[in-house]
Amino acid sequence: MTNTLQKLFLLIALIPLALFAEDTKKKDALTPEKYYECISALQSQFSNYTQVAQALSIYRINQSQWVPIANAFRRNVTNLNARIQKKASTMHPSPLDPFDPKRARQILRTELAGIVIESLKASSYPNETGALGILNYLISKQEPDFESCFKEVITDESH
Image (cartoon, rainbow, N blue to C red; front, side):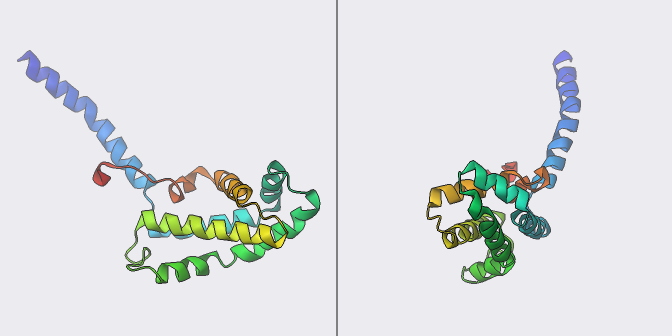
């Protein structure tokens, strides 16, 4: 009888944890709506001169290049959604319809990397490793709400 009571108490104790895990899973999951919110937020982030200047400073890019590079980021990031749609349309099946979070993340990251590399090359900065570091810095400055845009959430369903 004691063993049965212990199991019952354990089960009762685990129910709130299971509910919390389910709630967290839903919050962190990348949905199509969240994906497009991410794109919009990233467009703002890449247009934010202060954030861009901080990234350029960290990677020791000459300060005289900050404004031209920031302007190139601002110009190029306005096409982010179109670039993503174009890339997705060449893939079969498209990761955007039906929505495939893992492949959608890959496209988002690839297209952002392309924007950073193109913007820096236009300002005579050919270092792609540094460009990816700048990209990672700008991504790291995103609000925690957008963490699911870049980090795959592991759930029981994916095992």
